[in-house]
Image (cartoon, rainbow, N blue to C red; front, side):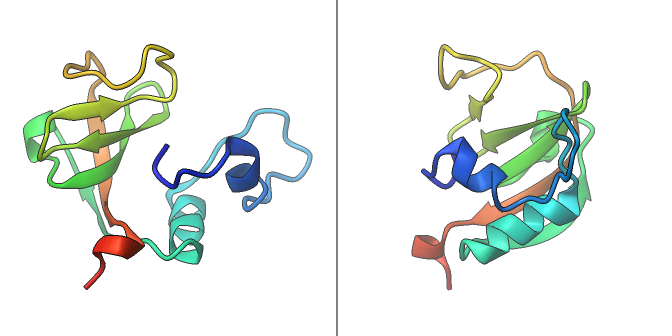
Length: 105
């Protein structure tokens, strides 16, 4: 969704070993994004969606990551097959601002 690459290709960049449940840490996620040329900001706490700035990967309650475009108020949740939404019932906990290689400084 964020990179335009298939899930299997991105998953192949993370060493989950023999785990059957694929849990990803911020460190692993940042490593993948950096390897793909994305710039990331520092990890920031979020108590509401108003705290999130720009385009960000957001860790929400329920141990789930989503992509949020705060500039356009669009939520991209990989768990929602209907596609992007303008509202989310999920509660943000922290986020990592990201910038695509095309928009880098």
